[in-house]
Length: 210
Ligand code: T5A
Image (cartoon, rainbow, N blue to C red; front, side, top):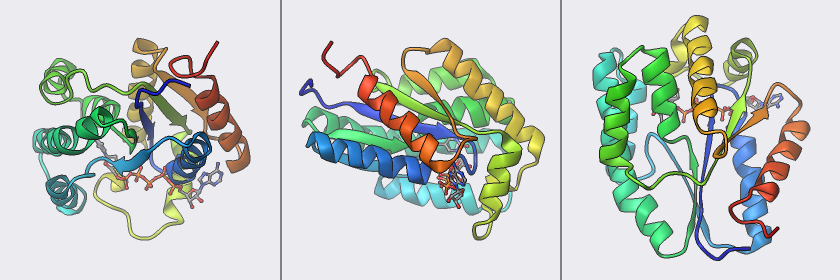
């Protein structure tokens, strides 16, 4: 096992099962006895959490405003929480990160991908995840699961075409970053999803000895 702190992110559309996946990752890191924090986006830092509230609960936001607020929150999160944690040897597990902006704002809202790339360079820089687990669920299954929960936030109220485009966005990101982004078939049972996650974490080339 390497001693360098690592950065793991979880991605997926609504109802993909990120909550269960987070618990599985936490258990694995506890077993490895590495120090870690669990955080989320949008949010994960005091000001970023305030921005999250605006993002999820404002009745209407222009797509460009949504994009800029996502990155404003991310800038606070990266500079004040993620980077300092990694620098002091603490692993970071984040429920969503920059891939979500490409999928949701780029593909979902059809905003310019080159602009998103620029914003990524400005805010994230080289604080890129070492491993991203993308929980790939068919939108109709994910939305059905998510509907069993309480009130929908602003983004969850979008139609199925929006979530189809988000899936295309994640497929596109995975094709561009095949070593970093590992696909988990999240249409399966919770137990089967959990097994895939454990396998991917244990097998990941960055920290497992050959
Ligand atoms: N966003 C975020 C952007 O647009 N751009 C960005 O850059 C970023 C960072 C955040 C929103 O912001 C958007 C994306 C989001 O719309 P959020 O609440 O953090 O909002 O994100 P959600 O995706 O909404 O997260 P959730 O926690 O709501 O979804 P999960 O984690 O995927 O769903 P989960 O784990 O709660 O599961 C849903 C239900 O399904 C069941 C669970 O028990 C639960 O009841 N379930 C399963 N059932 C059967 N089989 C399985 N395998 C199951 N897995 C889970």
